[in-house]
Length: 121
Image 1 (cartoon, helix red, strand yellow):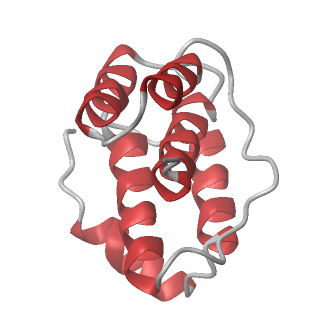
Image 2 (cartoon, rainbow, N blue to C red):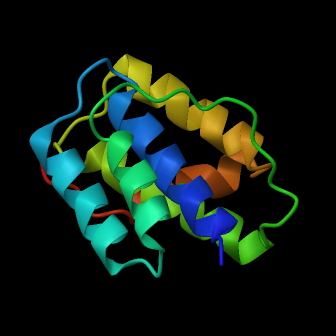
């Protein structure tokens, strides 16, 4: 059975990792752990792993199937990936803003989420 919401989140996280043109090893490792832990069929797992090897664009996104909690959790995960290497380059910052807008999150709520994330500086 396909898992479109999980695949959406994994693709989005990979796109965040690629936003600055580089996919840092710790970003890839974090997403690989999520892929391994997710309830995916072998084909979905293989597709998700391809997103770790070549740049991913956000593309068309259908958020209709995501609840408010899923949207917030998706943004939290995107922020974690962006912060995992200790800094957020301008390209990743701009990408997070796009993710926030696509998910329909209030900018103030997004800033609260970002402030709650642990920093590795």
